[in-house]
Image (cartoon, rainbow, N blue to C red; front, side, top):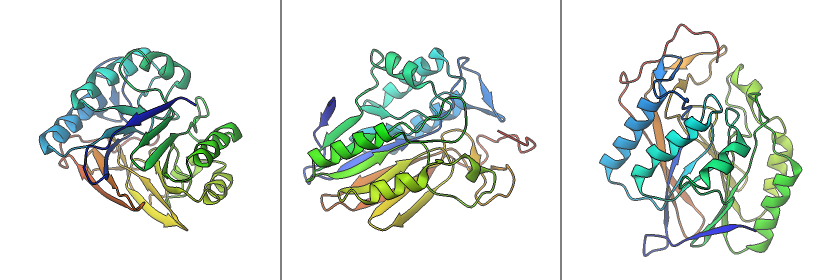
Length: 274
């Protein structure tokens, strides 16, 4: 098993994690997604993070780094994210080319390990991508990998990182694009006693609910936002966002979402699909 190891920066053993998601970068720097120049919004998010001065031990990117599957979009991401000066880990999203990501990132300074141990926590990075379709599916081989990590490290609290949220969000159109084997996935992780958190992207909005002993969290996009609880496709005017998580020694999680000011990146509300 290819495992990365990090030492927590806090003397108490707590971990600080920065989550970014759904950047949707293009081969072209000026690429536009539904009215938003995604490279510009991503740069603005990174600038605000740096200006906040909040420490973090690692950055986790929960998918859809690219919008167009291009090598140039991944090269742009690696270049831009380097300003944070922290280890970066990722999972593929439905707009990504997973095999290409792993080939490129290994020489661009983005970590390609799928298992990270830091303090008394471990992170397992799973692939839910079904190439070129919006919905997700976690293969049995991925679940077996998760179980192996948990079985080998029963003393570690576990974070499962995957792009597709394995729950519905109450939007009719978006809930057709969920993880399509979510029942299998949720039943599986519920049987792993050291799983504390499932960290996801994909839904372009805040989500934070607990089912049994596991907390499920999704975060706003660094690009466009989806309007919560919308019946048909709709965009939200809230600004691009990011999330900080503090993982405590006892297995509990504290988290907060931050956003750029409303009105700085305004999407095209007239579009009828995505």
